[in-house]
Length: 268
Image (cartoon, rainbow, N blue to C red; front, top):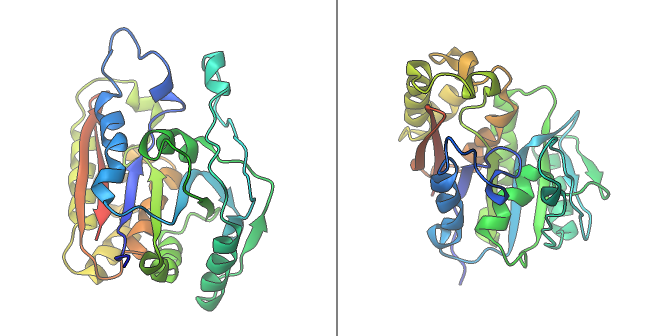
């Protein structure tokens, strides 16, 4: 009998970073993140029936569900080696699950759209090539809302919580720190440490009401806008936390990239 699956907020790195040579000055830049992603399936334990992924790289006016039966690759990155535009993750889509997601969101008051043409963006296929490399588990991608309202994304997650009891692994794919300008700056950064400490405390708060209230007000955290000038890479965390229900979060990934603190979380 299947058990309730957790929800996850994972880092997906930078472009196709795991499939190209690292910079000579930082030869192990992506090693720890890659190891974390490769260990994800073992950490989850149970084999999911489907993966429901919310990536920081798809925004629409209304929540939109990719219901393609065989989504292709969407190479939404630029300036990388030619071979990274030939990566392939041929996981089947999950159109029936897509209709179920649409129904759950409708019950929660969300108007939604369906998209049968869009391919998997790199917030999906890059980490999943490490985490579930056989590409034999159906994948459903759900968009972020363009208004980037954290409370709305928490509510979207809450609507999707029942799927966890049906073998669906809900994954928020983003980055807990996403300021590309400063990511390439000095190696030490007290601001990123302060924001990461705040985010970890909020995501792992024992009271889910407190957790959700703090995450909804994330922009008031210390150094929030230094960590996220624009919050599209943080909002997948809100969906994962919303779908957590009363399950407490814990930090399952902790690293530094360019001296900036990064974290990943699991709920349940």
